[in-house]
Length: 257
Image 1: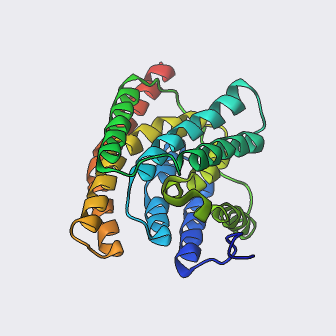
Image 2: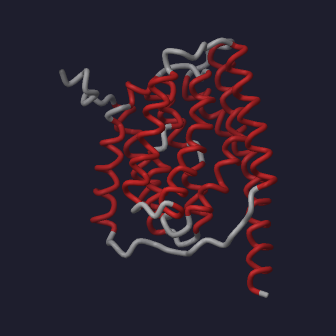
C-alpha cells in the first residue's frame, strides 16, 4: 500500500527533498526578484530528480520543460489578472501540470525523432519569448519568518509534492517543485519568474540532449552524465542571464527617469 502511494522514499528521493528545501529556503531570504527567479530555473532539482527517477532523458523531459513555462504563466495570470490568492493559483498551476503530464505520459512516443523535435520546439519558443517579452521591475521582498519556521514549512511542502514523483515518470525532472516554492516567495514579482523561464527553454534542450546521448550511447554513470549536463547548461545559461539582467537594468533606468 505504501509503495503504491509513493511513501517509500529512496535515498535519492530524500536527497532531492533536501536540495529543493535548501534552495527554496534560500529563495525566501533573497530580496532580489531576479535572483529568486534564477534559483527557480537552475537545474539542480531537475538533475537530482533525474537521479532519483533513474530513467534516461527523453521526450517527456523535454516536454515538461515547456509545461513548467506554462505553469508559471498560469500562476501569474490567475494571481494578477483573475485576482486569485497565491496559494490557489499555485495549486491550479500544479494541477494543470499533473493532469497534462499524466495524460501525455502513456501517449508520447519516446523516439529519437520525437525527442529531437520537442527539443527544437523548446529552443524556438525560448528564443522567441526571450526576444519579445516585456520587462518590468520586480518588487524586492524577503520573508519576515525566522528560518526555523520557514525551512520546515518548505520541507513539508516539498515532501508532499514528492508523493507524485512516480506518477509523473519522466515528467518529474521538470516538475515545478522549486518553481512552486519560488512562486509563493515571488508573489509580488511573478513577472520576473516568467521572464526567467525562456532561459531554461533555451539551455535545457542542449542539456537534455547531451545527457541522453552520454547515457544511451556511451553508457556513462548517471552522476557523470549529470555533471556534464550541468556544465553545458551553465555555459549557455550564464551569458543569457547576464543579458537578461542588463535588459532589466536598462528598463529600470528608463522607469526611473
